[in-house]
Length: 604
Image (cartoon, rainbow, N blue to C red; front, side, top):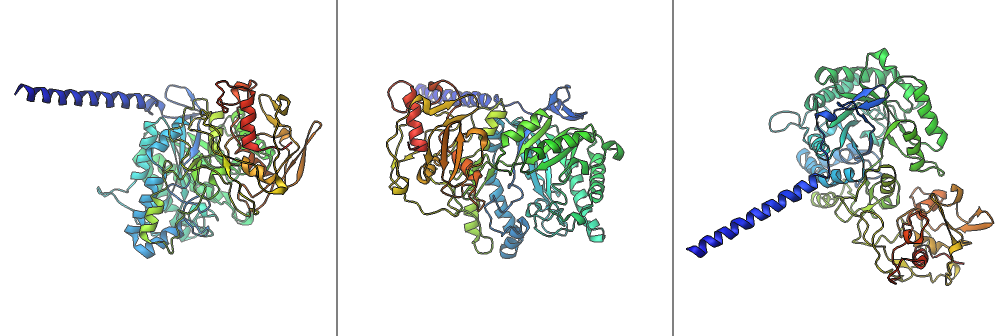
């Protein structure tokens, strides 16, 4: 009997120890994040945001594009750029409404999970813009609400997202990205080319009433919730609509209707309106009687003057409201995200990057995503794939599923978000990221690879350097033995300059196997066979493929490839550049030379 009691006591003590361990582990994990509370509720104060304690808050965030509304170019569904409406209706016609929405639930459960919100917080962001569309809540185009078990409109997906934001100290921006009738001509509103939302007839009025009703339902549910920073009334209205067909007075009239509908149930919520593509398209808030509003713009421009000019013109309007760049990405070959963010930060413009993740054959190499894939075998073909096949493909879309790699937006996050810590979701190393996208790639000869010794990681989330290739067997691009001296590498606080005469196609392919930044002098444009001068030195760069998948070979491809060279910290001391790659027990300049030799394969 005594032995029996001792056994019971041991079991009890074990359970107490386990429970205590789990408690402290959970406490330690949650201690990394400060949940949103009532004191964090935001409101406008002139051109700034403040919380309830009067502290200024500057929103720096990222979009969850492709989660609740898919876009063909970076989501796993082949709809011929017709939009998510085509995919959904095709699945409904094949499997029925219930089964079609089951498939979307599988996709949405995988695409964004709790670990993604944790990861976004760890990256240093403080807000998340969440695009959604009307078909998340309505099962057809006639306004039939999707109801929960209590008979209320089912907002569970948004409710969960807001709860995750609250838990991990993130503000949520709820963005109505697509409406029935379509507010623009592009597929990102749900259906390409079906532009009727602003029609001045009974049908157009019905579309707008449906959108206003949706906002009132959402506003009622989240009234007073401090984790919701603001409601984003309508994404990019009249986007790509021919100039003579645009009437921004119609947009502003819808904004006014939605504003007052929200104010009836949520009087203190911040509301943001987008001026497409300029803040000057919006009216003065005081003339409309609007308060606690943020004015928003999106930018996908080529030249720096576009970015500085748009912000400066916005301030010239003298609206005395905060400004928010809800989406942006430089499209010019001589611009990068750092340049644009610097413009916003120095001009007091809050911002949200587009976007968190993307799935296609080139997403991991692009600077559009924090996480991207390297292949497209899991893209769904809604007209032909079986239910089971679609469920399998969409169920594999988790960021930590092994199908995604850390993308270029991580670099931006760690540079501009000082509170960033190690990412919760590590860079995928289960497969070697060995090939750049093959779009329009010329035929090259693959050589065997030679592995680098494992080195300590130099970037949060990274494990080891990937395998580097040996010299090419192609006689037109043959590498010769390398000899690096200190003068071969010029390093200052901003740039790393490699003083070499030429880079062959095979060697540039080698460079594309790595992640990192190599900034060339003066950011000069580089194309196939172009020469680049730096002082008395002359470089020749030969591009081997269309790195960014735009169908052309341009200087953007040079930067795309060189961004994926091995990560080198731009510091002055050799021991801060490289790990102990030759396993000598010391970190010396030879380690820097070794990593450079395996990453770029530069020839003398």
